[in-house]
Length: 129
Length: 214
View 1: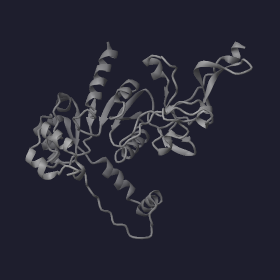
View 2: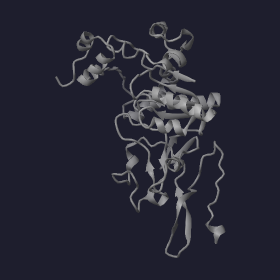
View 3: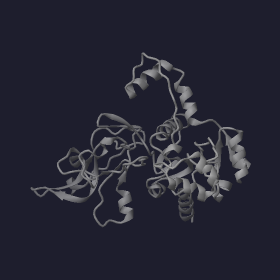
View 4: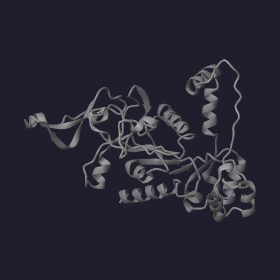
């Protein structure tokens, strides 16, 4: 049995065609996990059988919730691991700079797969230009 | 004399943490100056995956240990870890196969630790494969943001459900993983469609299952 956990379910105009399942294994045989109804709809629209799609939780979020029950212990471990001061307040900024470092090769590869050329060129500027 | 030269068989349960050096048979008997034959090579206990930068310590450009180093005294070999951006790999230490050996012999030279957490160089490392026949094989793609979560998932699958788990890279040597592990369930983290995806490995598993079932 083949299972796709689908860890990258945040779809954007740049990767929606790139993430779409195409091969018969993904569409008919494999089981898919989804975080919500949006991704279920995306998979079903792509040709995946609805009985093979299951709604679950993001494993990383589940593990984080377990770890966050004891915040002081978690903070102490993170401070020891990354060399931070545990006695100050931490502010976390998640940064997604993925598209900023796209090369023209990767952008062209997405266009070849089926993404709209104008959308790709609008969202991602080739790195180095 | 023949009795003395015969390698000792080490019985070890799956859950036992190996303690001390384990004597394993080598492939070619070595003779010392006195003419006695030594079949054994000492192997450090519990060769889990070494993901750190110190993987290639005491090793030359080829990856093999330098003569005279501590690893060479333990039996040498190559840590089967690729360097690179997303380097992660299933197996721990690959013992040296003789030159010209066939594929099967080379695969038999690979050993993976069986301890839950093996102590290597004073650190506790994770076990990346329980057995050849496992219940779940977890493919992972990115070392930096996926491997830690996958190892924690494997720990919980083992402890809470009592299943055997293996973790393999979907980028580096997935063919080798498909040959080494016979899983019941193959789990991929990504729906990627490129050559680095798990889709080629799915085909290999299907082909191997068809070949072995007949």
